[in-house]
Length: 248
Ligand code: BTN
Image (cartoon, rainbow, N blue to C red; front, side):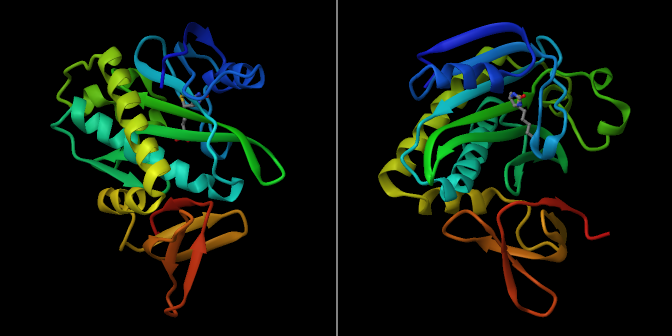
């Protein structure tokens, strides 16, 4: 991964730059990295704060052989790869994965992952994996209301800056390693790693899904990457897309 590499200065979003390359036939593993994004985007249509020179804002191209309904597995794979990479570069941090793929330190978000795919029928043409890591941001870089919920690696690491180039290299290494494991042995080992690092399982949460809100206790992942949630009446529901919050 990353052997085809485009480093850019200011772009609206690395997702769109990579999508253009993907449409032109760029190979799997192609990577776009930007110093700054002016319209960085997150899940659920949210904006992603991407100031110049302070983060890892990048998009990685996959051309996986899995069918479209299994993209949630890649979402979870990405979270495991990124958390392993950050833990290697900043060993002092204890990183938890919030379903599906937010990485948290002390309950605050340090990175986000956005998968966007292009498919024909049920066949995936490509997947663009957007990885955003708030590396050396200062409190001033965040909008006030985000500070309660977000933190940078530097802030969580006692103010010590982190080398972005090293982090990028380790992310690519961990990603490639897990992607190979996935190709060889399927989703089971990824699922086990995800479950081991999760901070979502076995806590009561509120899930806002496209079809409504439910309160329950996530217990495990299913074989497609969905979250199996135990409802108050003891029954189970599997959720594939949701935003998770406190039960309130
Ligand atoms: C989220 O947590 O909601 C996902 C955030 C993903 C941000 C990354 S930064 C690189 C890539 N380009 C974007 O516009 N978004 C992703």
